[in-house]
Image 1 (cartoon, one colour):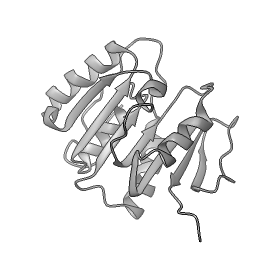
Image 2 (image 1 turned 180 degrees about the horizontal axis):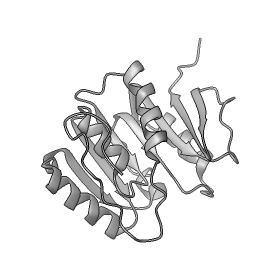
Image 3 (image 1 turned 90 degrees about the vertical axis):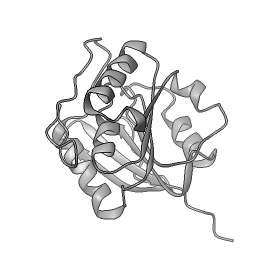
Length: 183
């Protein structure tokens, strides 16, 4: 995996060989960030990368100007790899890591983010609750977005907060924003 563009363009992101990862393909990442670049200002943003794995999406965000990325993963070897990559890229001051299951992490007091990436396993049983918690519990700032990668077993195109839903091979990307109820 490589960084597509920005100040870290071309750098290779190592993938820990744990058998637990399904890194976002370059084609999917390129399309996803194309949508983000056309609709959002990445410079100075705060990013949360859930199910961080190799850190692929978070490092691409830093390369494109994100100020900070909080990586969350339950596997310590994934987080060690992210920390080593951050040091080798010279961005360790922009990165923090947290060893935790996502369900436990989202039960804590929220910190608001501009962008939340979630790339859970395709058979993740807590998918609906994940979306609800992020959208309603204060994890997103007023104009924040949730970017969720999933497979065809889940269809969020009719979700009231989903504004983007597109397939890239086996992977679907759905984007959500908090929609305030009309009075």
